[in-house]
Image (cartoon, rainbow, N blue to C red; front, side):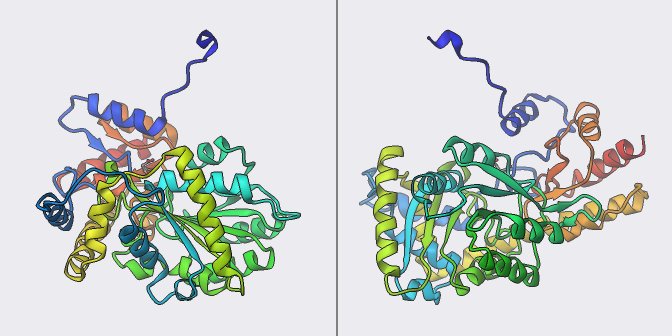
Length: 408
Ligand code: LMR
C-alpha cells in the first residue's frame, strides 16, 4: 500500500540548513534558521546553562526516570510565573493549568489538539486566525488537527512595520469567538511587534468580539533583554480577564534548542468556578499528553528549573539574555549603518526598528536567490534574515552583497 505514498517536499528551513552545511565556500554566511550564534558564528552555550549542567551532573541522585505526565513541577510552576509574573491574579486565584511540552512546537500542537477537541462553545467559530505572515509551521500544526485556518494582516510592505489598521479591522470582521494566534514579542518572521498602546487596542477589539487568544511565546527575554517587558502583552490580556492559552519555548532564551524544553499554559477567566475550570482543563491535557508523548523529556527541563529556582543563577541568566539581545541589537545597527554608508537604494531604518531574532529585509525572492548562489549567503526566500548569523567579521561582506543585488 505504501506505493501510493507521494514524495513530499523537503522542509524549506531545514533544507536551507542542509544546503548551508554542504556549501564549501569560506565566505558562507548562515542567516537562515533562528538560532543564536556568537561573534565567531558558533552556537553559544549560555554560561548559566553550563553551570546548571555541572550541578546536575554532579548530583549523585541524577537519574533518567520518567517524569510525570504533566512534566517537572519545579519547571512548569516557575515557567508560568515567568510569563504571567509572580504577582499575577491568575496565579493567586489558582486558575491556571500547565503542562511541560516538546518545546514551543509541542506546546502549539498540544494547544491545537486541545482546542480541536474542546473548543465547542455554542456558536463558537473554530477558525484559527494566524498573522500574515507567521512562522511557517503554524499552518501545518493547526492544519494537522483539522482546525480551519484564516489569516489577519500583520506586515505592511510599504512601511515594513505593523499593518495595524488592517489587523484591527480583520479582528473586528472575524466571526465572534474566533481563535487568534498572537506572537507576544519578537514576531517571527517579521521582527515587528505592536506597541503597548496598540496591544491595548487589539485586546479591546478581541474582548468586544469574545475572541480567544492563543499566544505563541518563543522569545521572552531574548527580544528586549528584559523578561518582564517581553511578557507585557500576555500580562495585559490576563489583567483584562481573558481566558487564554500560551505556548512557551525555552529554545532561544536558554539556548536549549535540541533539548526541547517548553510548556503549555492555560489561564481561566476570573469567576467562581475558575479553579474548577483550570483543574478540568489540566485533566484533559494529561489525557492528550499521555497518548501523544506519554511524558516529556527530562534534561532540558531540569536545566531550566535549576536556573529558574536559584536566585543567583536566575540573575546570571538575565545577564546572558542581555548579552544575546545586546549583540543582536548591535548587529542591527551595524548592518543598517553599512547599507546607509554604501548608499544602497531604499530605506533601511526597519532593520533597527524591528526586534528579536529576525529582520524582514524586504529583499525579493530573486535577490535572495542571487545572495545564495553568488555570495553564499543563506536566508529564507521571504527575505527574512536571522540577525544572530551576523557578526563583526561578516556584516560588511553581507551589506556589500545586499548592496550589489539591490542595485542590479
Ligand atoms: C525559525 O523560525 O527559524 C525557528 O523558529 C526554528 C524553527 O523551528 O522553525
